[in-house]
Length: 166
View 1 (cartoon, one colour):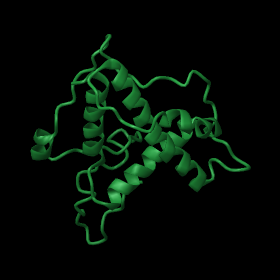
View 2 (spheres, rainbow, N blue to C red):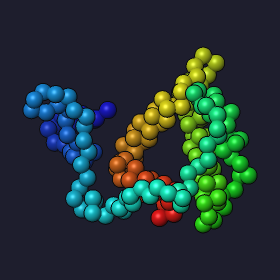
View 3 (tube, helix red, strand yellow):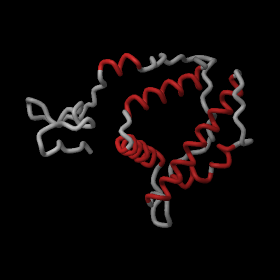
View 4 (spheres, helix red, strand yellow):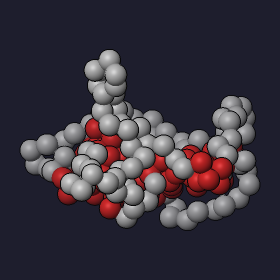
């Protein structure tokens, strides 16, 4: 949700770069957040994806995970031996990335329990809960006056380094 402009007619620092909904043709468009030119230059570059044998994707649990309760049941599998290895091999990278996925799985399950998406009466699909977590992270970034797009780019850069060793 985009904050409303202050009543005195001046844009607040958090809303001044945001475009309103709609355009000259009257069609609704999502709000866009534009980074300040000096901020855009300071962002780390996002490396292009590298596909090949060096990719260290987290291993798959090899079971269908259609409901968040099924993800909850896999938390022990994601924990593995409980350690990050930080080794520079494909095997160590896959192990560590499974652990990293497990950290996120713990957060997603906790969010589902807290919001009622996982309860005696509800058992949402993981995609719905993950998208809800992402939306709520945007709310958190707004409340802390952080640039979510910058955080997302930094996260993508970390992810690429962890997957491809870049």
